[in-house]
Length: 520
Ligand code: FAD
Image 1 (cartoon, rainbow, N blue to C red):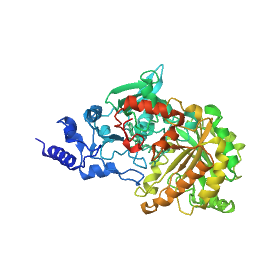
Image 2: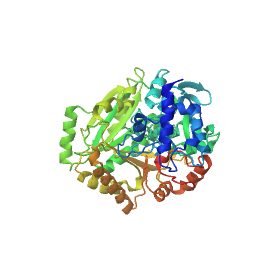
Image 3: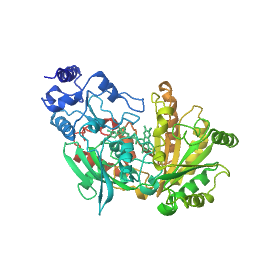
């Protein structure tokens, strides 16, 4: 009846027949007539879009892309794969903002989660319960910017964020979701009350700390290995209206970290709501796509002149205190003054802004369209570093490797996080035996033809850590061998493996992470 749908089915069938008989090729026998076929596409546009990601570094071609119109479509697809003698792999794709193919399914099926947003989404519903307080039930395909907007309609907002809000809820919950609020509230995965998850066996389950708790903790930071999240219940609180936003420039690394750690120890009442930091060099200047909205031209000139007299390396501490206008208007300046007054930044190098709370949270989104080159390659490296070794890391990496590097890179983020805010039972890994660890984000952006220069830089840093016994953990990890994954998970590896055997025994989900490449 509908010729275009017929063409799609025929295309898939033709494509499947013409595929070499690899383990991941979708066998035609595995696609019995069903509604789901109408939502599978294998035309070149669909395949091309699902083969690449924000990194622009790897191409991994799926056999087909599912544009689900309901959660049930995803259930059907996973069950279909399980019914095959040789199952095909399946990857949920949130926004494809991974950098090395983590949301890809080479030869398998990519599930374009944004399609649920248009069709069968759980949407965003704000509620309140005496035992839970305010929360939002959110479709996992939703973007954090939309969660923010929906919350603000009720004067509410999530407590924990990423710097950039055009990321999917399911994507960040599969990694961690960190920003300057994480030292106070924990990462986004610590602020989830409940999830709906379709396991690798095709079971749709609701889970929380109390119900199906093993699945709940497995999925949080679980790199998509155990199930596809379809709904998350996210903690909300009363949103402030404004933010005092301060950046302080340092030339002494030990003073920077001492002040960062002091600030995150102050807590909610007396301390900032947000603490980050960054490294400034000629090649990673203060004005970049993450912060162009902050410094005026004269601020930048001032920082650059200090950069020259400080050996080409400075550090920045960024803090924010939220407030509500007009209620806190009389006291907020004094509060911020108290926080800053005893800190050891370079005298005079303090820069302040007063912005709407929503503009602060969406600071990167409002800049990226103008300043980020989406066609560039993004060979990012994100690490968690043990606090006990950050002085060695500074000497070896910031003072030496980074300062010597002669190509323009991108922002370099560096700020502390508290281990106690990360529940040990979650799949996410952080450095062992340290109460405080630092996150480093090398957010390189370069011409595709030059990405190898930054790969070399990243490798030099990783080798430096390995040679000097600095036990780092990668955040948004990328490893090529099973041994590396085992080392990454450390004492959590056996649990991670057991959970995989329990929830996705046929190794169907998230093959782009390259953790389980054969059946256990
Ligand atoms: P995708 O890249 O699509 O997916 C990531 C992984 O999660 C894949 O394995 C995928 O299969 C899986 N997945 C996706 N959806 C689901 C689901 N519903 N259920 C189960 N598994 C799923 N991270 C931070 O923590 N803090 C930041 O401040 C931050 N800023 C960023 C800024 C930019 C410009 C970019 C590009 C990335 C940033 N990130 C940040 C990284 C970001 O958290 C990751 O890219 C993350 O993967 C989210 O992106 P996504 O929604 O596109 O997920």
